[in-house]
Length: 83
Image 1 (tube, one colour):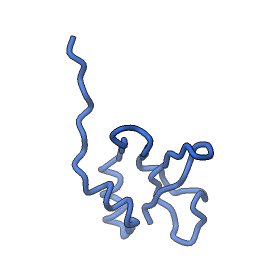
Image 2 (tube, rainbow, N blue to C red; image 1 turned 90 degrees about the vertical axis):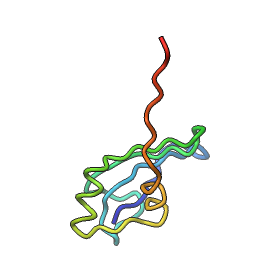
Image 3 (cartoon, helix red, strand yellow; image 1 turned 30 degrees about the vertical axis):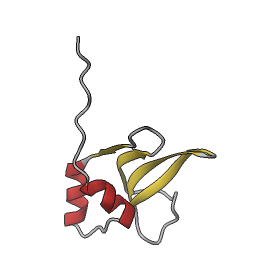
Image 4 (cartoon, rainbow, N blue to C red; image 1 turned 60 degrees about the vertical axis):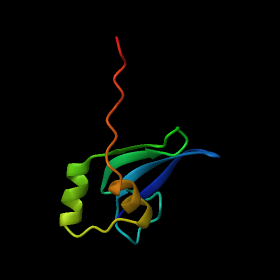
């Protein structure tokens, strides 16, 4: 399963997007970390290793509802400062 694993201090969450066996605990040992999600930035920052996510989905991994919503959004190009 591909789902979120909570990190960060109390009331300051950020998440890792992990591939993990469904029966394991939320913050249990993952098979692989495939991205990050930080809802505290404006707008929320999401980074995926899209090739690895596609690999795991092809192997039968299911995305959680929230990860599916985050993955369906188009990737945002990093802002290039004008020099």
